Each structure stands twice: as structure tokens, then as C-alpha cells.
Image (cartoon, rainbow, N blue to C red):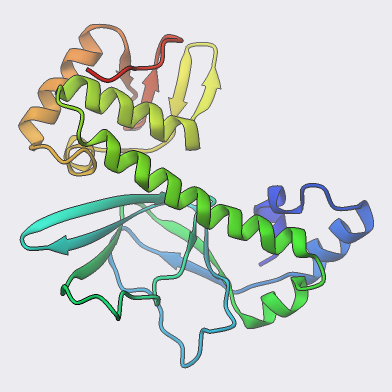
Length: 226
């Protein structure tokens, strides 16, 4: 697959000749992940790889520690390196991956890295994606400490909409088919509590569940912690 046909933002700022060259030469294997538990691929030597670039779909990465789960939502534009583990940690943890829907990834292997090495801004763009994912996770972790369930879910949905939402005449469309169970998992609350809080937001007119399972956030006011 031509990586930059799928993710042209990574070529931002390059001259037209470089853009044309990279769009045709920078190809990578495509990986499809069906909905459900996922075991990331492992190669003999991945030291020269950038990682796996999510093109579409949604994956949950969960860290399991002492009976507790710490989930992270990963979507289009995120860069993953699932073969990097916390080998030096003295605390044993388990990590699991699960695709919420059919997900497409580009395998940015050593061959791909060798092609783009002449364009540092492209490599910097990929590094920025990794940093963005780290900031997003930190913000999500902060949200789960908000006490009121409605406020916590409101903030989580706006946070996800900031990354993947699309502005429409009727509100901000979050094109992720997130179930009540998934939202409860991401916000670290029980499903009945999350369902009740979502109904409060829906009745207030702040939130709408669309027929395809995605969400519509209404109004211009961004939530504040309570």
C-alpha cells in the first residue's frame, strides 16, 4: 500500500516533487485486524522499524495489574510499537490488545524507514504522532479522577472528539461505535453507572446516539470538571 495516499498529513510542508516521489515509493505492507482479541505480529528483528501506523479502526490496549485494568483507546493516526515491553519493570504486568472493529494498519518496517530517511520532517511527523498518543493517554488518565459520572463521560467524549470528531451542522460527530461497556471501561466505572450517566446526557440534549452506534456531541460549551 502507498502509506502517504492513506495519511497525506505526514507530507505536510514538503515540496511538490518530494511529495510525488514519496507517495509513489514509500510503500508498506498492510495489516488487517478483525474485531476481537489481537496478538500483534512479532518479527525476528524490528529494531529498524518505525512501528505500526493505524489507518482506520479502533483498538483498545489494556494494562492489567493486580486485578485492575488501565485501558487506552488507539485509533487512526496513532503509531504503535507493541513489541516494546517494560522489560526492566520490577512489577509484573500483563498487556492485552483488542480491536473494537475491523482495523487497518500500515507496517512501517525497515524498508520503509530507509526510503524516508532523506526527509527528516517525515520522521519527525511520525515521532510527533507517538508524542501525541502519550499526551492523549495522560489526559485520559486525568479524566478518570473526575468524580461525577456525567462530567467524566462528557469530558471523555469531548476528548475523543478532539482527536477523531468531525464538525457537522448538527454538532460534532464522533465516528466511533463505542458501546456503553466500552465507555465504562475507558472511564473506569461500572457499566450500569456509565449507562445511567449517558442517559442523563442524552436527556439533557448534550448527546445523541446515532443509528450506526456512533455519537453526536451537541453545543459549543466544552465541559469543566466537577
